[in-house]
Image (tube, rainbow, N blue to C red; front, side, top):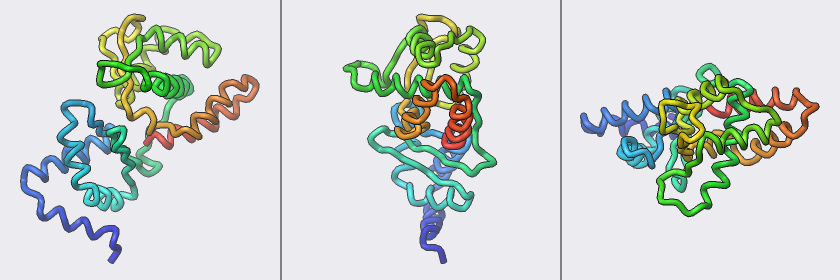
Length: 210
């Protein structure tokens, strides 16, 4: 028997309530990729998943998938196989890069907020500076909506185009793009004459994000 799967036997010892939490956590991971400790409604599921991490890892191994966790960040991430990955447009990839850089900058600032925050205007300014192109209103709304649905950010407004709206940066952002991939992507963006580099990175990052 594969000893990595021995932990599956633990499922029979879960109480009814624990089994419901197991199902809820598995559903969030497969549908939303991340469980984030800092989100109040996910704290209990995060703690439950960490306590039963061997069971979860064995369960997802059976799906040909895996889990990545960073307890310092308080994030558990689902890594699926190729047919259940999310794919992103070039604008969305650029936006994730911008948010990754902003997260690095903001996380060292002293703040009373649970997550690093910035305004939509801050995001626009950084995006425009990095890409050399002004992000249009329709693209801005689409990008922020998509990344919010992927649990990388939360926008505290119904109007994603409001320059004063606040964006919360979730700690899932560092797990969506690692440092090496970030450096390669920034170099590709700075090389305006190499569209192939951007295309290659777009595929790599989209696959890494799920």
